[in-house]
Length: 142
Image (tube, rainbow, N blue to C red; front, side, top):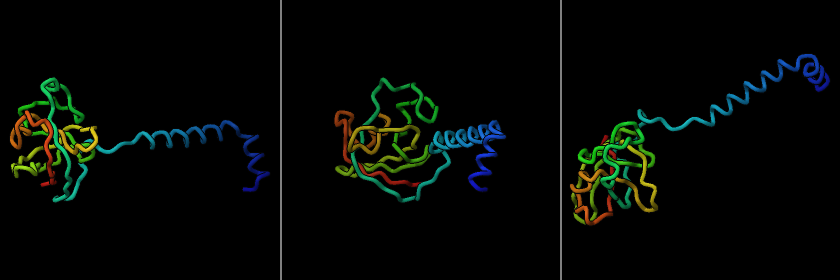
């Protein structure tokens, strides 16, 4: 299509071109609103990270987590920034060698240097709550 015929087409059928442009814009906006899936993603078994672990305080008990379930401090669960919900992890305290298996059901932590937030029950499996923050290695187990 030459510039002249394009100009004539625009002049003769402005509504058609406007509708087409709006559809294209809507597709771009919708594509920009997409996000990572809440579950169903996968990460290779054995993937690991090291950093600091903290735990959720009592004030979070009963609140909804990012995946929609209610937080239960007695369950062995964790928050991670990017791993898919449902990912099972082995969390090892690198100072003591104690470890616990947890399931990712929330997002966080958002504090520099921290790689995981644990339920208080999970944290107690690897350290005293008085420690507050401990060095850990996390490893995907399935």
